[in-house]
Image (cartoon, rainbow over all chains, first blue to last red; front, side, top):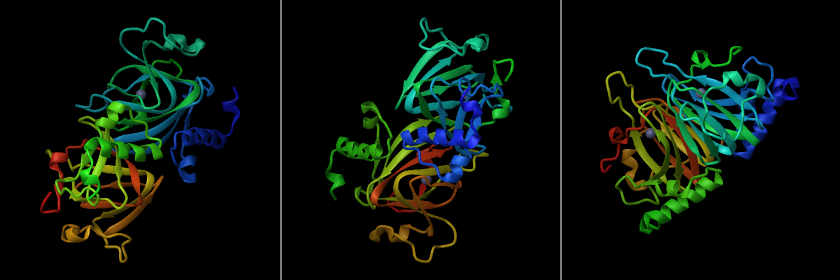
Length: 175
Length: 175
Ligand SMILES: [Zn+2]
Ligand SMILES: [Zn+2]
């Protein structure tokens, strides 16, 4: 578990190397605000998501996120939070690398990637969407989804309605 | 008036050259959907805005726009449209070049750029904000603003609440 053992600053620096591949320009201060999220599983090499938040108001949100090679963002959904709110809607636009995205729907027969082996029971969405640089996909509110980067890692911009991470519902029993 | 005389396809191709400088990847189909807006003044070299819309739902919007060298986007504001809506809020994040942005507020004493000479009466916002690659600024709803690119042109991502361009109010009498 190599990434786990690095100080957060070091992981942020690595994330910024991916941002640079995609011509995403952050200030030193912004680099230090990159969020490194291991979802409490303490296995960052396998499970995690690193992100920089451009803006998150009560009206809209935009982020840039990095997955390290073969790293998985675990399955979750964004439920309705307030009356009349259908839940967070998010649009991914990949800037670098490949993202294997799985959403609810018709299961894909021969998926290109698998969730981390010991967590398989916590991954149910199986409709595959493969996104490479320049590809875009919008995930409807209240819909289970998870994603994994290919061998090169991935940089993706996420446009969305406001982010209220504390309301996200994860399938994993330990998240 | 060089740009005015080009077919739209040709202008779109030029816009895409700027996008490429900023590592913005569009498909051929997307390039053909780039909007070239001369605001009805028919002086695209001086006044205009070219943009690609990533997504515009009833919840959020994201665009990538290009200003050609010294081109000006004329002064406008985004008023409240529906009950309880304060008007469109927009966040600019510059990816390439320099944007000279002017918003309502304390006038800047020696502004770096001027509006096109014959339109000066239609430009009132005079508080200067200079944005270069990596810089970001959020324009509050219902606030007059205009902007001009530097010598190299500019590429900027705009994150915002939904876009309803037909409701924008321009200061210019002929827009
Ligand atoms: Zn999500
Ligand atoms: Zn505006």
